[in-house]
Image (tube, rainbow, N blue to C red; front, side):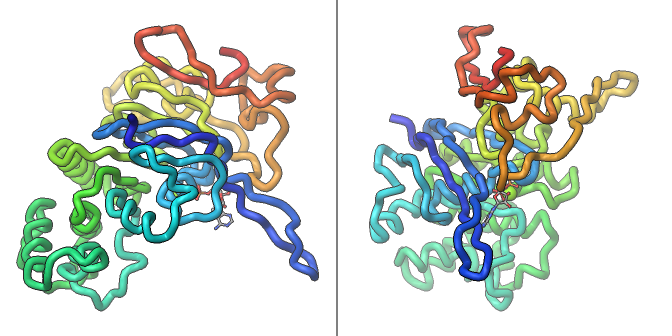
Length: 323
Ligand code: ADP
Ligand code: MG
């Protein structure tokens, strides 16, 4: 049984307007997303800003209600789960954010931030929780004496380490990391990615790693899912997606990764136009307005996510009529 299984997960936000505040439309943030995640596996979720990555991450934790479709964690459906069971199940799933403390009271010390999940779930007493917080900080490379300091006294990279310490306090089975390194300098990014890799291996953690940049997800993911306008348009093993991308959108994302070797140039494919309006998605394939290969069928029919059998030993799915 996979650790996590999503089937046709859809999240549309109603939009109200007019004098009577009637529903005048819907933001199609996430539409019919299906995938599964094995224990200990990392799935990279990549796509431009506004493609629905955060909404999908929040939907999995049911931070964004109501959702349609099914989300099973260890076989249990989270969508229909009651509040008590949900609280219990959420212990096993944690989220890491771009700014780890944006929603935390600035008067809380690092120690109380890291031990808060233990306190919420009634684990241990004040003394054991303090010890645990110091131990967790040490694990992520922060001086355990820092428990009495405040987050604003730390750099961006250190704050992200503290965020990770808090996320692993309850020994979760799944971490959803939403752009955890997007705000950091490139040199710090790789330190945080390495820390996440180490911790993931040591704790056999499954991870959904969200980024808007293919270069970041490439090295940390076992598989990659590419999102465009709320749908998954390509899904496959990391190597297969990066070396042999099939969807024109994935090709464009990959061509925008800078090549470090001097003299060697990527043939850069600049994407024309913007992400289509999620309030009024175009008919057919959402990418057709920007696609260099567009044909008549693309303007009429939404392409299903089909298995691409070019490399039968490497399962790879693509939503494109021209594949
Ligand atoms: P990403 O994380 O890929 O940048 P988001 O999931 O944040 O994308 O957003 C997807 C779409 O859903 C965007 O068009 C965004 O404006 C919209 N959206 C996100 N949250 C809400 C909300 N609470 N209410 C209405 N629309 C929202
Ligand atoms: Mg986001």
